[in-house]
Length: 612
Image (tube, rainbow, N blue to C red; front, side):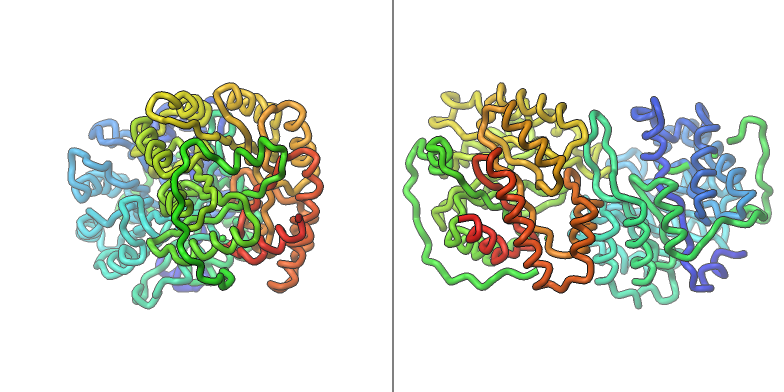
């Protein structure tokens, strides 16, 4: 069946998942470029294609996302990738799409020419369906569309952009504008989004789009399985297949005619999605996607690709101008006096509007918080700078700020410059963490400055006293009490203490295992420990935490308790569970680290009141 006829039926076209991350998960392949396997390990690529096809996908992509710029090698990889995909798809009657990744930044060829050269080889190999994906701009797209349709008017072109949770690409371009421009291009048949974001954020983003601009064209959405976390030396995705599938069903309901998966999605995710969409396994038939003018080429060595509502009203407070007192640190003094402290995390703004954030800080101060912690671009997405906000908090509210600083996006020179500024402003506490893994599409750009981990950073900062810093920072590290291999986390924590860490903030404690790990940490570590408390505010929130937030584990019995609850009932349950958790961890901690969900400061204030 012609692909346009298939899509006209109103049933979503299900694509495969991520060849690249799935290939990298295989033994011995983590460091290998999967596209080279078209030639070196074709049987593995064939097996991956078949796994997705057997899971129920109706369209697969050639393993050509990143074939490089070497003309001859790129041609050989594309030719092999086409043969492998076509042969794997033929028994299932599945569509085969030529997969083009983004043109290299500052490459030798303009993007349009780069795409044209690749498209030429795909067309020569008999492919008439194309997907150019993970784009951060639309450079070269119009040229690609003109070339493909010029050679093959019946060709089908899908253009897919990569946006973060803020709807922006890595080049700072708004995804909505790119979507509208691409939808207006002649020769583009489908437009959408893939990579970088998990299903929840892409669903919310798609719901805000004006789909009328498609004017008969098709919307495509292929999110990551969730967000990445580091396991050993590997970047992994832990989003569950059933959660992904449920989100994909909602995405289809929001208007997506083409759905599939990107980084971290496996055949399990695709099989679950097929079930959620009411699909099944393919019947065998003629391979779809090859040009009728050219048969599929057969060869003995041919084998198959990829690649936190509302904030409470806060009374206006007059500005408090604090005189800097070198060396004074009220948070440290209270901890050393053996008194329990409460640090509250408040998400930094995603724009330059800071009034709501500062009102939240004042409300937390008045509720009795000892410190406000501010994340450094959580999940690798740009937010207002944590250190600049820390300075503003101290100047205008008198609160002790605790900014998070990651090893991501700045080198040691930039880090020292920032620390000097913090010291000038009287900010004496910092949380130093390696940081969330950068999005897959950004890894090449940021690798040059992502060159040290939290332990090295702690050692570096602790050594600055007397070398530019007149007073030391109290350094905190992170402790993941939800880790499966917690003894390894303890080893790292001991190294952090040796490097100069004075204490730790833990990931949220929701399970008995996490509490047991916290008790073990109390036995082994010398530093102060602030136990993490994250109030879950809805059933949906619990599912999101389990599937798309690295380092968080919510037991199923807690998830089930939120089913069917309204906002007030859910907040009451959050209060009950959070206070219980905080009391349970009290023997093993020196204070609490409360995380504010969706800026619900009133809920945090209720929790603090119960803990007094």
